[in-house]
Image (cartoon, rainbow, N blue to C red):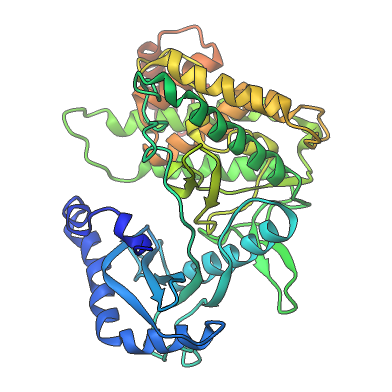
Length: 435
């Protein structure tokens, strides 16, 4: 069997697509690993059931925001995956403390999933969450996680495009059964995770005796939270801070004010949508980074592996409502791809949720299908994803929020009223929001 890493994206093309400072984080890690492969291979062999020899592949590798990822191939054909924590991107992201929380969170999340569900996930072989003299690879090595590899292909590699706005089948109706199997399996995954609940909102902590509890969020160490309102208020605060961050303004001198306006819309939209009956939990477990590149399927579209659980945690039911943006159609016509096709995928997934058996019902009585099909779920999960990834953009997220809120003014007129209101508030020493 050829190495799994043979199917990973082309290294040079992927590196060339990055800004130089980001590419250097990756290549510097590879430069560190290459002269130390014997240490890694010796350690991995010592953990193999029959202690057979292995080789770490350093020509084909991949990465995410936090980890550089390598394949280790054993002489008996077995493959493991080793993820090394990369240096910080800045003073706030990928710090040693954050990496430690992410690694412990992923290990704990995978334990929960393996023990309480049938979702196919990797098995953790070993981990060391901090650089330290006790690192089994040596004191100079970074934090790492070693786990079993999973084989399969992404749904896009099966010829189905779920991440764009057009026809996911690309005109090939013979692929529809594959898409429907994929959606049914995501619905089943969603239902299974909804059965794993805790009394607070946050990321997972692994105790010394192997017990799993909820602690601060893995990303920034905030929480845990005892109520949904508390969680969403902090999220709204974060979007307002994001809107203030310097970003290329291009030819639009009002770009920052537009980001601030969109952040204010999100806060104004989400708070009335929260159901008091679900405010205190219990709160369900969410993957946190579920998209087609983290889901492996077989030729029939059946899910055979779900990867990258370092963003997992418990969330309010509204934030849980949409497991991945790929299964939520735009509720409003934004000219973003084909709305009809996005709604077709949304509706097919929603039908699979309605058919699911024994799905938990939160205290409010809303079913998973109702939550997925609600404005609350759209704002709290789908649009929250775009708020962060698209930095409070005016034309996609802003217009969606404006339409969902049913505001009487044209979007651009509403924005101008917001600007005028802030100007009047500053003159009077008071910060004024239009909503």
